[in-house]
Image 1: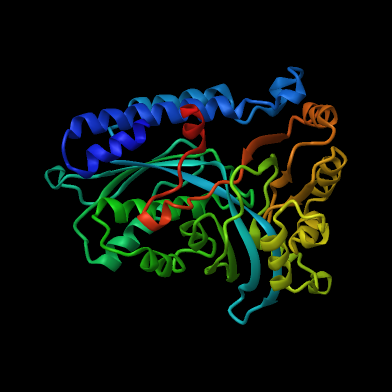
Image 2: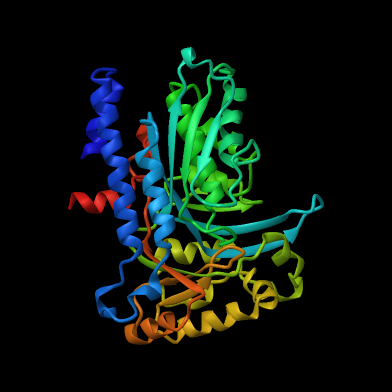
Length: 384
C-alpha cells in the first residue's frame, strides 16, 4: 500500500518529500521481510534444527540493513526476481560456439533488489555509481547493471544523465537462477522509467539480447518459451502464481562453460521441445507426466560434480512432486511440499553445505501492459 501511494505522489510530481519518505519505509520493510522469510521453515517441519535452513549469516544481514538505512533516498526501487527452467533442451552447437536451446522459463519470488537514483544536473555527475552488498560482485562497468544503463543511454540518445545504484544481492552466484540477468533487466526497465520512458517495452526486449542470453526473459510477464541462445522470447500463457517451490543450493558452484564442456551430445534428450511445451501449457507443472521435466545440462553437471546427483536423489526420496536442476546449476528446485517433511528436515539438518530458499511462482500479469514491474512478494504478504 505504501509503495502504491508513493508511486502516485511521484507520478503527479507533487509532495516529492513525502514520496521519498514513503519509499524509504517501503525499502526498509522489504529488506526486513526478506530477512525474516529467509529463516522461515514450513510449519510441518517443527522447530528442530532451524539453523539448517539459514540462508545468510548474521553479519551479512546486519551489513544489508546498515547499507540501506544509511543510503540516499532512491527515486525507484525494484524487486529483481530469479528464475528456474521448467525444462531445458539443448538443440545443437552453433558455428559461433554458442548453443541453440529451447526452454520454459519461470520467475520466482526469491530475488535481489535494485535501488536507483537519477543524479541531478547540479551534482555534476559524470558517470554512474554502483554499490553492492555481496562480496566479489564487480561494481565497475563490467557489471551487467552498469552495462544495461549505458545501453539505454546510448540507444535513446540521452547521454547526459547518470545514475546512482545500490544492488542488494540475495541470489547466489553460479546457481542457474539468472540472478545477474534479472539485475540487468531491472536496470533496463528502471533507467528507462526514470528517463521518462523514451523506449518502448519492445525496444527494451530487442536491446536486451546485446547484453546476454537470459536477460530478455525477465522483460516478459513471468513465463516465457525461449529459444536461440535464450534471447528469442515467445510469450506464452503465464503459469499460475503461488506454486510452491523450494530452491536447494549447495555451496559449490559451477560455471556454465565447464558444464557445456562436459556435454555429451549423444546423451541429449530426443523429446520435441514444442511437444514438451504443449504439455505444460495444457496440464501445468502438476502434470503426472514426469518425462517432460528434462534438463539436458543435468548429466554433464552431475559428471563434473557427482555430489549434485546424490543431492537430487536425496531430495526425490523426500517425496516432492518434481525435483530437477535449474539451468546449468548448481541449484536444484523442488515443486510442491515434501511428502515426508521430517525426512526433508533431517536431510537439510545434517548438511551444513546446503542453503534452502522456500518461495513460489510469481508473474506480472496485468502489470506489464501498463508498464508495471514485478512486485516484491514479501511486501505483498505484509499487506495481508
